[in-house]
Image 1 (cartoon, helix red, strand yellow):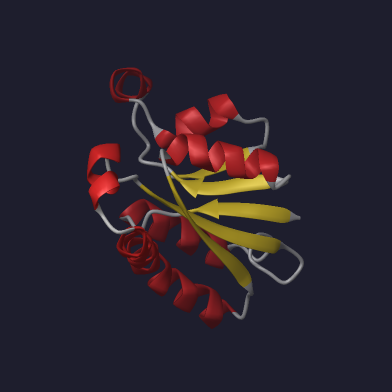
Image 2 (cartoon, helix red, strand yellow):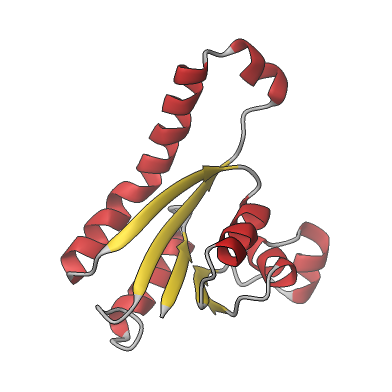
Amino acid sequence: MKILVPVDGSSYTKKMLAYLAAHDEWLGGKHDYTVLTVVPAVTPRAASVIDKAVLKAYYDDEAEKVFKPIRQFFARQGVKAAFSGKVGHAADTIAATAQKGEFDLIVMGSHGQSALGNLVMGSVATKVMAHCSTPVLLIR
């Protein structure tokens, strides 16, 4: 199964990884994992005055801050995973990556807000589910 694992380095990411580690059916060699983090884009005005190499290095560094402990997690589990850092709006980028990559499943942590909280503030997980047809396993 081809599984997309969006991460942001939060405590919700940690809970999702703990869930995967506790369930052998999800974490194992029979699955193909891609770990994705989405770095918010620098405003266009600021990006226009920053050297392209500096901006790319910034995005790469921000992604690696999130990836470092997750790389260690997958290594401890003995599971190979691909890592992809992208720039943009989190929900849109996750949904587009899932569709384009033809993933079978998205496994992601969720803040577990109430329905009212999602209406007022929105949720990356809610938006991902609304914008792609890939099944989503939410871990709270």
